[in-house]
Image (cartoon, rainbow, N blue to C red; front, side, top):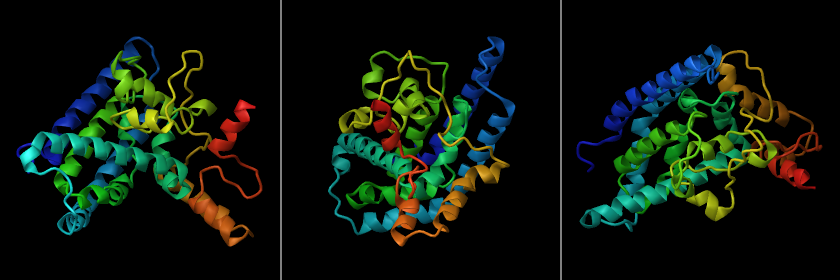
Length: 296
């Protein structure tokens, strides 16, 4: 077991730190007229953050039970408690890779993007956007974490590392911090994550890492922030949302609308499981199509 430090204790300590960062950034924004915040957007961030907490609370028991089943019947290939340091290092590395893969799928499968898009829908980029979490990610993560439990990582340890990584993930949502020197080579930094939230064509679908940036560099999804091309935040499809529920469910509605067209079954499936931006008639473009056109 993890002793005193559990995911709930980690969240208890990280919450006041996160709120303090938000308040400090608001003060700097107002004091030096940086315009990092606007009231409407910040309210939406906090409401969606609350939605995340509610989903996380309601799904926690079932999710841990799911992981416990795979842990109990798993292969237990991971390092045992006799190699505690290697156990935690391997868990951090493997879980960070699994999160990178999950995050990439969130951007490349439209059904998953529908549950992730509201994290990107803010046109601002500040610490409070880090609280604007994908409301259904607490459920989604348990399915992606099954392989970790299957090879012998304890479910509570998996969730602890996830919560700690989420704390780092909140920290990288800011324009206030520019570059972090040597850390830029190995860790996801505010500069890297600004790129991830960019709608500039060259920045689309880049820098998926939560804690480490090494996976993006290994698998070709890394892009450095270009000082001559400022990041434009938001989503490619600029939607004016009516209310908080519309922010969460708008893309699901768009998927339903697309699949009601008089098209083939294969094309309907593409609208659900294909990449965001897919269209059967070429009226919209995927990220790959836009980036290919941008190179020509």
